[in-house]
Amino acid sequence: MWGFEKMNMMNIISTHRFAYRNHSITIEKEDYNKESARTPFHKDYDRVIFSNSFRRLSKKTQVHPLSKNDHVHNRMTHSLETASVGRSLGMKAGEFLSRNCPEMPYTPYDVASIIQTACLAHDIGNPPFGHAGEEVIKEWFKNCDPKYLELLTEDQKRDFQSFDGNAQSVRTVCRIEHNDVVGMGLTFATIASMVKYPWNASSELNTADKFSFFQSEADLIHKVFKELELIGGDGELLRHPFSYLMEMADDICYGLLDLQDAVELEILAINELENLFVKLCGKSDFDYVVADGNLNHLQKIAKLVAYSMNNLTQHASFVFEQNFSRIKSGEKIKDLFSLFSDNNLIEGLKEAKSIAKSQVFNEKRKIQLEIGAYNIIGTMMDNLIPMAYEFHTKEKLSFKNQRLMNLLGEDSLRKGDDLYTKYQKMIDYIVGMTDNYATYTAHQMSGMGY
Image (cartoon, rainbow, N blue to C red; front, top):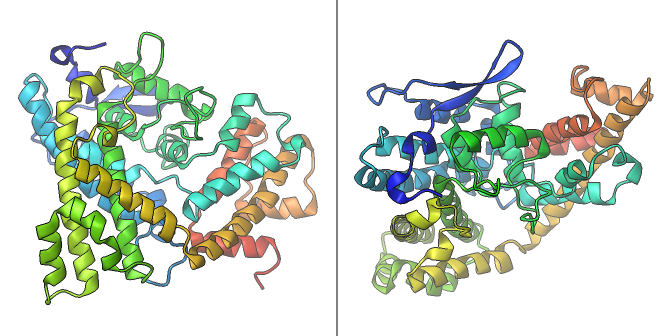
């Protein structure tokens, strides 16, 4: 492992990208000029934000499916806000690295751009209806007719039975979007910063169906981590230090903004959240905001969330700096939050997540719509996976499956692909849908769309 003074910043902050040249995948290093208006890391951000996959996040569930309230967060607004917090954490981290690693040729703005882009893309592979969508895909493969799995390896089965949006996000940027061989061609620094679970579904480390890449992307990810020198002596992949900041930005945002949405939807009232905001903001700031007669209740909750996010971000930056040697040495640290030393912030964020879990995630309308989401995604799985299986095992498709193939496009499946690849393309198709389009498509497939 590295010592802090020996850390090779030229590798950790790498401008290498995958490219597809002459029918093969190559690794190319993009020239870096900090005086340029668009560094390689700024280009990463642009590639994500201008992508079709990112654009569709505006119609995907964050917490509340198909909400009629335009102020409630969707997956895009969550990603943009997470990216904003990530940029702040990245600037502080970049300033810290510039002070302690004078040989580093990159600026704090570059570090901020890397983490901002990783945050922007962290949910880009989430299916319609959020985590409910993930559960439907997993359960379908766990409970399906065994014949649909008999031609898959055990590792391939596990990819589907443990399906995770984190891995699909990595797949989206590395394989699906722009180019179906190397995806967006993001820099290795940005890709590695997205990987908070550096193992696959079959790893013994995958204890809760949380992993960051499928078998189909394993070779690409290993090449990325090898280039960055993030492989331990035992061959295990080591987390990129910036991935801790990406994860922390996500934790801060969903931990607090879910509560802001709940106040907007009148599921919770501010007085029910006093205890946690006193811990996160301090008693004086809480009392000042609540007593301000010029603010309505929505403006008050927004201000309390802003104060809380600032305090959490400042402390997270401090914790990252204090523990940097441990983090980059490859020590197995769960996350930055586990290293927090401010008990008020620890208890406040835990309470925020607890209230969200008990009172927001179990709100009646949300439950009703998630049950509907099971039926919507289940209907598409019931149609598309058997169609792919028949296409793989038989010479001629049934009339129904031929019409499904026509619906998807005749080039959606290729005879030469193995069954695992065919199934992945069906999952890619479903995951890429918005909530509204998934609902429409399921109705068409079930004969309810007339």
